[in-house]
Length: 175
Picture 1 (spheres, rainbow, N blue to C red):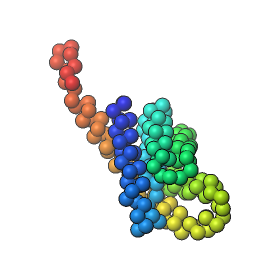
Picture 2: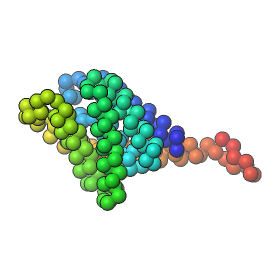
Picture 3: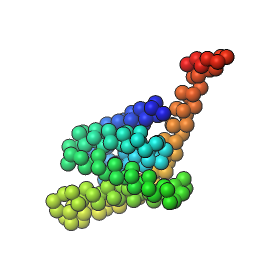
Picture 4: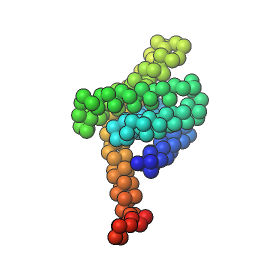
């Protein structure tokens, strides 16, 4: 299971690098949402609590260090999203694509609300960013389930590949 945690740490690190470099181009700025949100949702649904929280907190810390924003903001947002999705998944069927779409859309919208609250003049910022926030929320709701499905296939492939390297010969396991 530690290998899976490392896999998602690398996926998350790749998303952080893409977000802080490529997706900062003005062409992409109003459309793309925080790509770590679907990863955080996936980790909360598919990893044990301790390993998932560890990966989420490390990725949040790295995002805080590279984003140049308020330190601790991403870390706390990802942590609360992780906990919220864990609690929601106890009461609802989160395997449904429509529910996943709504879940990721709500997470992206909530992140934007927290960003607005943490800025000095939230009403002016919210009024100026309403179109961008709605576009990112809709785009997240449309693409989020596909990202979750892609991450699920990646985990399945990784787990079958890593377990396929072991062979039993007699009472011994050769790796």
